[in-house]
Length: 67
View 1: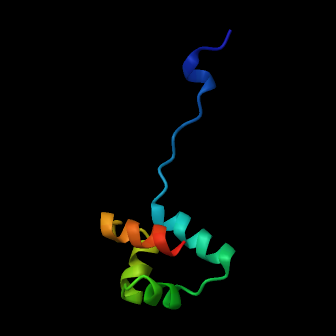
View 2: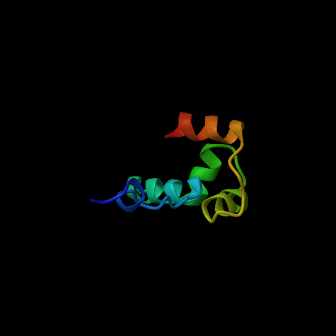
């Protein structure tokens, strides 16, 4: 009989920027134009998408409204 630990899959953390990258790709939205839409510098959006910048509450609200 398997124990509980043997049945559970390991948790893999994913940066929200990875999810945003895929969402923009699926919607056919250019990163530079999207940065302009949400009032963010394109370089900051790129850093966010590449996991080098955290998503603040204000940015999260802008993303929610834009998407």
